[in-house]
Every structure is written in C-alpha cells, then in structure tokens.
Image (tube, rainbow, N blue to C red; front, side, top):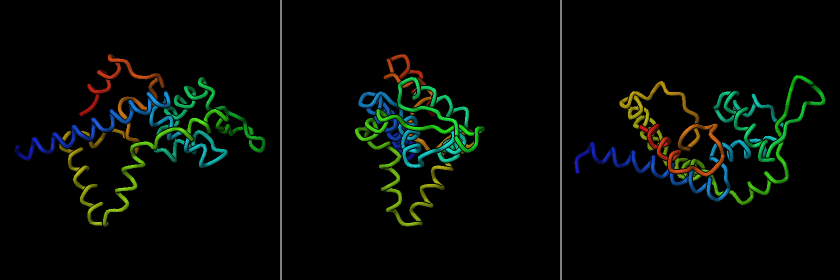
Length: 174
C-alpha cells in the first residue's frame, strides 16, 4: 500500500468513526452531537444567553438558535427573559434534559480530547500541523467549522437518519 492510500484510509476511518458515533447518539438519545454539547454547555454554565452559548461552542448565534428551537420542541430547553435585564433571554434545561444527559454517551470529541491532552506538546503540534496541511491540500482551509465531531449540518433535525439523509451526509464529506 502506498502513502497516499494510507492517508486516504486514515481519513476515511476518521469520517467513518464520526459517522458511526453520530448514528449511535441518534439511536440512543435521539439527539445529535451538537445538541448534546449544547445541553452540556447550558448545564455547565447555568443561566446563559444564546450569544454566550454560541461563543463557547464556536458556532454562530443563528445555528445555536436553530438548535435551541429544535430542543425546545422536544421539551428539553426553555427560554426565560432575564429579570435584571429584559433585553437578555436565557436558555435553561428542563428536568427531562438533565435525565437525557445522565444517560447520554460522551460525545466523540470528549474521547479524543482526553487522549490528545495526554500527548506530549510536540506530538500535539505535529498533529495540528499535519491536519491543517491536509485541510489545505483538500482546499478546505476556508470552510467554517466548529470543534464538534459530527457529520452533516449542525442544525439538522434530531430524528434518526434515514438512508437518504445518511447518503446526503456522506456526500458532503471530503
């Protein structure tokens, strides 16, 4: 096997691992990784505005609003106007959301982050540099991306993917 094939296989494994984990989350919780991360952010921060969530998750406010809308329809999140500043609206978790988070598997990036932090600084730098170069080689360096390991759009519906959706998600991958 030549070097190019090894690189392409490694990339495909990363994409496939992300895809499989996303499907596992959807099957076990009915939620996407970004939805779970958003719930965790609200849980960890307490009373938080949409702007603060967007900032913490490196997502646009529009994307966060869309995710919150979907979670609100599922009775996992509700909005409440601030009592001290009527211009602010806080996102809060329902009791049902706390239960979902207790049962939810860890997002894939949590597993990755734990192992990545155990690496020596030079190893971390090598990985970052290599992946940035790969993104550049695939003309992907200008694509807006958040640090969320998930396939497809971040604000897609939280229903389990059907065959058509899974095909569309795979087509959008490099």
